[in-house]
Amino acid sequence: MSTTLQHLSDLVGGQIVHGEPSLVISGLNSINQAQPGEITFLGNPRYLPSLKTTQASAALIALDSSVLAEIPETLALIRSGKSHAGFFQCHQAFRATAA
Image 1 (cartoon, one colour):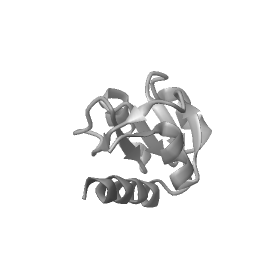
Image 2 (cartoon, rainbow, N blue to C red):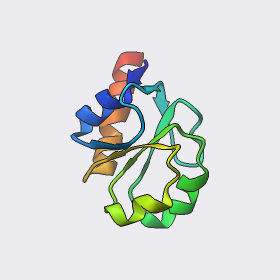
Image 3 (cartoon, rainbow, N blue to C red):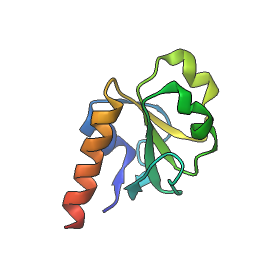
Image 4 (cartoon, one colour):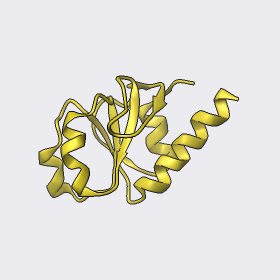
């Protein structure tokens, strides 16, 4: 399955902070395992250093805007108050279309 950043943002009730809404996302993975074309998530600021080096194309975050300055602008971001639940929703959506 492939979808867009906008579709995932709508799915989780989030807001795109960086990145093009039309960015194609083809999967999801953990912050250290993610590859280009995948989305990851950051629910705890202690993993911010990993987000700075992830290969993911996008991330789902649940952080206040003060942390955004520390995240590379090349990484597309969806901000949502429910990053863990949102990541689960994304996982379910990718899994449902793969079946």
